[in-house]
Length: 319
Image (cartoon, rainbow, N blue to C red):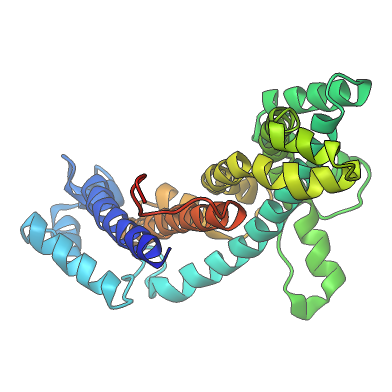
């Protein structure tokens, strides 16, 4: 197990290195002048030359990359061109706010999605199973931005229960903090819960028909114990993989949700960097998103091994 963890950590390091090259190439080395992209096509040659010197664009591409990558390894994320301030404090503040939003959302997605999937799976073919299935199909068909618009119109506009936009610190009170989170979290959860519930339902249906579940029932074990101890741990194995994928999907959803709800997180900061052509800020945001996705896959693999002790990562089949 320790060898597998080390191998996965090395894989994450390699992934980050490859992605750093791609991100740098996409934002700075592609055909076209980055200085003109930032200043506009009608910028004066003097302004362009000044910005090129400031960004080091006159150096060879590999020198520019090494300088940027060395700064990343030392914790220097660079300086925002638009805000003219170090990127790190701004970025980590945004990451912290997005982590709160994403953490609550993925926790609710896992809890509610697995619960609905188990409920429908053990009642396969009944009316409750059909209701859950139809609801999840409808959920999958509706795009996330539409959910956000409907939620804002209903709960913030018509009912006036929650604020439509903004963020409130805990220093302003727990109630105010929670009220600003409810609508963004509800939007993210609504957009992802169907994936988990559908997969868990299918896994539960297959698992409930296995030989070891039938053997547990034959021993006279209560049905709830059979489901909780024998069926559920095995049915959750594919769900964990989808949860890791949903973390990546959620990173895209956060951009939409934070933009609609004016939530000052990583997604909104990324949109700010794109709209204002703030290349250093854009590079830093993309590297953080890459790391989050890689870390989510590592956690999913470790949970997979935890739920399935028979898995022996890093060993040959003969062992």
